[in-house]
Image (cartoon, one colour):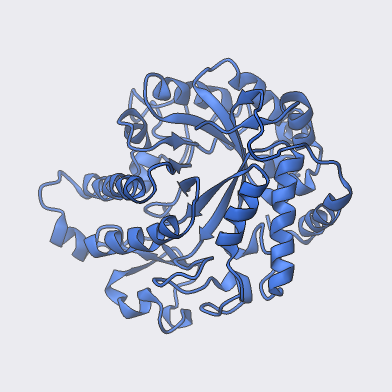
Length: 407
């Protein structure tokens, strides 16, 4: 990600969209089948949109509409749009500042409403719009003085933990949990979003030689738990359950989905885990008990990031697909699969990802598991560039006609 050549490819692909034929996706059309066909649009660090900070409102809007048209062209039906990348907002929030990724200056209005526009324009194209939030990440640096003066993290420095070169809110503080929910649910109140979406960041990924310093919070709130890890998992469980309840109260038709790192636990750690040897386990390292969320029906859908190829020794896509299908079996939680389109054609990736057919084989394999109800592709820039034609093979081989998203 972030290479100049990739950005050039993406821009060229986006500019060509106006001349490319698009699949029909008229709103309200009765379609032949039902499955999730999603695309993430990441805004953090201007990964997918906008292409750079400081564009005019008209330029930003045009780029956003091009991405929605891209989804229609490839017969997708859902766009997962990152609207709170770093404790900020892509809508006029009364709680948090405008995102710096829009204007280049945190807190400066871009002169339009990206989230409101995205919802309206997605629906006009027959697409669902899932609003994607990151609950606890504040900044991709550790200097609070770089945040706008009105930022909640500056007004409440006791909420903030520096770790791994970034700033995070402390998930163990009840006031933090209440605040981030209120800030996120403001968007649900304002806009008819089809879903709220979290990604894989809860407690931060481990950084060698560093410790997430929540000693004082654990001392204040950790009584009654066998250890700090159990207390941390309870903090994240509370966030999930409370967010789900808030969504249902505000907008009952909206769903709540989470896209975690693909490995819950390795079988060597827990016999209920997958036959993998991943270096990160969400249960132990991110303190996210993703299996329980599915089994207990706390969320409407889960979309594990199975970002490995079939046969990958440490984390085989086929093994994890089967494991998640078994977890979802009999639950009320829908299972979608997060797909690593960004790896296709990347020379730094294993040989399997140089084969344009690898991604298509994932969808073929998923057909053997009725619990799998669709796929979401990371991410929009890579859908546009499609370096080796992997996405084109998915569309031609699996998306021959339009499909409704599961409801």
